[in-house]
Length: 341
Image (tube, rainbow, N blue to C red):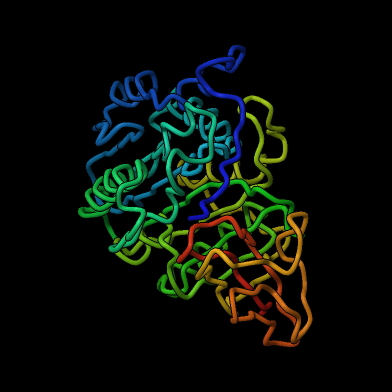
């Protein structure tokens, strides 16, 4: 059976010398330093599972925020961003204005310098996993689900989940987000406004789950959740952090409860026109691996073939996102989207 081809980057533990201590610690899921600082500031601190830090403070009216990174082990930019942000915030711990759950997703893959160990963790948040059930990532998804459900169980109405990623391939929109369409309207508007503050260029409203972490927290925990793509995959310690300035400021403001900043430009909003599912090993994309996310295809253009079935563009124009012919049979190999605003 064809499987996803993991991209290998420099391992974190071996050859990772020279990393800032905060980055090294977060990449190794070591929260000891920041946990101690939050505890000293009067917060209730817990480590509900490996790679997870929960920081709570009694009182009504606090938003509950999950921030996750490293769901794919080679997507290192968000790890560096969150490491620096969390380090600075823990040194000014009283400024934390929300209840917070930090999740470092695929810890083993980060340590190994791989995208995943056995299979894509971000396809595991589903009730039936089929052939994925025996993968190492299946047990990790169960840990993340349990911690996330417990965190939101006692939460108030304002619930957030920002799952930070970077993309494998280049994109017409260097930053973009996928938002579950089932998020309640008021929360969705607040989330979209935050994404605008973070200079996210495009938003895809997604009507159904592909087993992703953010869709799970939206569907089962009532969170205003989003998978946020922030540029390209890079080796840990070699990211240009200036490219993350605006999302870092927006995230810091959210955690500190600061007033919303003006949006420089409204994100373009898209909806899913069709999902491209790989049904067999005969699956073939009609374009090569250099194709960018949000590449436009005209009506009737061939997207992919899978045995006798041919996927074609149904609207006057559709844009392809996440094309990946190397996914396992039965999983989504791409999205086709249309712009709505």
